[in-house]
Structure formats: structure tokens, C-alpha cells
Image (cartoon, rainbow, N blue to C red; front, top):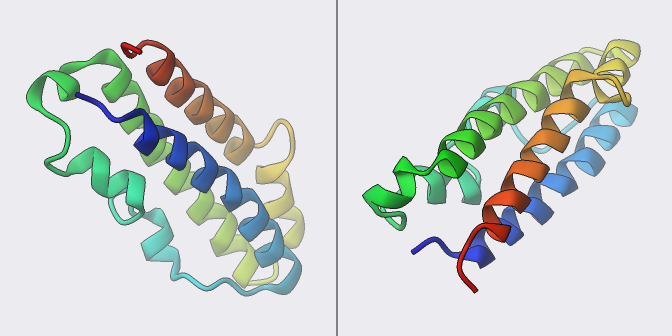
Length: 123
């Protein structure tokens, strides 16, 4: 059985990345290596997605597949922002985080997909 709490925590945690990335753009520094940010199996949600807590039926779910795909894209987009931020390319990093930017689009899609997954679960 999928745990709603894990997904809800992930929504919050991934939402906090916007703050971290904005700070990285402003300062040119972040407390994580770009390669670590890029990896979608190192955050708590990624470890849960790839781990053994989910059974085979959960992992066959279209919600699982969509969230897994979007989660990987989220980490790719976040890593792009970090790469630009740490070398002082503020404008380019800000563009990725703008309303039409890749980070914002992927982040919104991931949040929506996770919310849909939660709504589709039994009470």
C-alpha cells in the first residue's frame, strides 16, 4: 500500500527547493554538489520511490510511473539551475525558474502528479 504521508512530505520538500535555488542564484553557493542534486534517488522521496517500501503493484501504477519520470526531470532541472548559479550565470538560472522556465514547469507538473496520486488512493 502506498503511503500518502511519504508523497505529502515529498511535495513539501520539493517545494522547498525553490527557496534553496533562489538563494543559490543570489549567492552563487549551495550546500549540495551539482551531481548529487541531479540524482533522483538520493532525496528521501527518491529513496522511497526506488526502495522496497512500494510493492510490485504500486510500481506498476501509472501514477508511480508518471511521478518517477517527472521526479527525474525535476532533479535534472534543479541541477541545471545549480550549475548556472554556481558559475554566476544568474540571468540564465533565473530564466529556468521563471513562470515559463523549465524548472517551474517540471516542478508544477511533479506537484500536480503527486497530488493526483494521493487523491487516487483509498481513504
